Length: 218
Image (cartoon, rainbow, N blue to C red):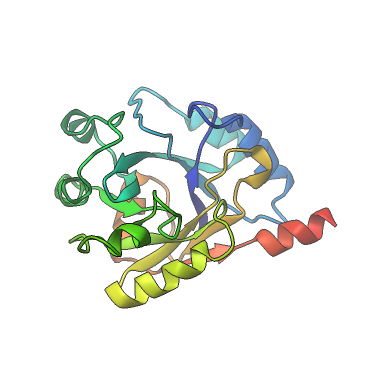
C-alpha cells in the first residue's frame, strides 16, 4: 500500500491546492502515481473536527491527518496527533523544543519524524552538524518531493549513521505535485493507528515517481 505522508492543502498558508483537487488528480493519474492514500500535514495547526470519510468513499483514497511543526532542530511531522498533544504543544510556536516533541509525542502514542532533513536551516542534517543528535528518532523523510538537488542525498548518510528508517512524501503545495514521492508499506494502512504502528515497527520504504511524472508530461 502506497501513501504520500506529507501534503499541504490550502488550509496551510503557503499552499494553493484543495483537498478535492488532490483527490481528483490522483484518481486521474493513478497509472502514473499509484498512490492509495495521503496524509495531510498542515503547517502549525491541528483541527480535531475535520471529517473526510465522505471524500474517502467518493474517491476511494485513504485520507489521514497529521501536522508539521517547527522546532529548534527544523521541521518535524507528527503522526497520531491527539487532543492531548495539541494541548501540550502550541503548534503555532515556531521555536518548539525538538527533543521534547520527539520524546513526548512518542510517550503519548504518536510518532514525530523530521521532514526534509537535508534542507538548509529547517532540516535535521544541518542542526546535527552543530548540535548533538536527538534521542528517540525512529524515522526521517528520506525522499521529499520539494527538495533541491543534493538535499535528499544528504539524508542517506544521516540514516546510515543513526540507523533511522526512511519514508517519502511529496511535500505538495500544488495539485500536480501530489504523490511524486511517497511511502510503500508492506501492511495495509486504513487509519492513523495503523500508520503509527507501521512507522514504528513495520516494513516500508520511500518510493519516487518523479521520473514517471516527467515522462508522462513529455
